[in-house]
Length: 294
Image 1 (cartoon, rainbow, N blue to C red):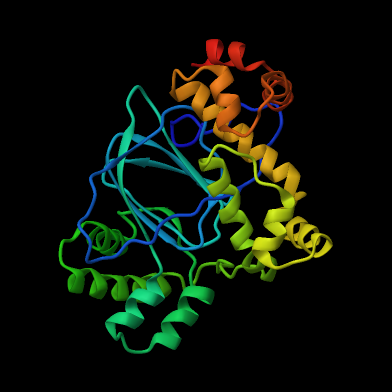
Image 2 (image 1 turned 90 degrees about the horizontal axis):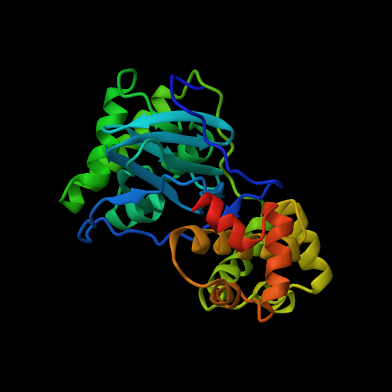
């Protein structure tokens, strides 16, 4: 238990890795979309982005895990997830929580705006941050208010000025805290085209081949496998397989799609092969898994 609430856990028989999840960059001049529901089910996974994620919870409750630290949240809370931080969030209770989320490249936005002292701001973002996850609004009321204004305010100029102030305030409040390590590894920078290609192929309903991932990164097969192991902690084929099983699990629990179609949607032409792999990953065949968990 944490603060009187249940902890999060993914009910898997074998651990799955943290996935790179491409998140489209938002423009502060664009209309704000409505709030998004956050799933109640135990099918969320540790993932990371290459940009800054800000969030405001407008209803419900749940928990957010960032780099192994668990934060409960409720309506009115705000969230800060820095680039390359592994995280997952899920709702708790009978209803989904609802969030406004914003994924941005703060330096790109502030440079286009003409903000002063960009080199100093970039240094603060890379080396001066200590606060992340769900922000304690009672302890850091100004940071909470600035996050909400960046995410929810209507005017672009106002949101940019609040973003500038947010970085300054985060750095000031982080002075006495252990600093976060937020720079990507050299290997991740090399691999980002391949990681994006994995997601694109699965969206097309096919499993990517390792040789096409090598070409996307302009690396030889040996160099690609070495870099992938260093950056992601596992071989590329194992990562692809885990991504396929992650997508299959979601389709089983959140749709009525037939198992044969799900197998095709994650890149399997052979349903029996898909069933065997799902059993190895989750300890149950797909049909039984859906019946028990869905």
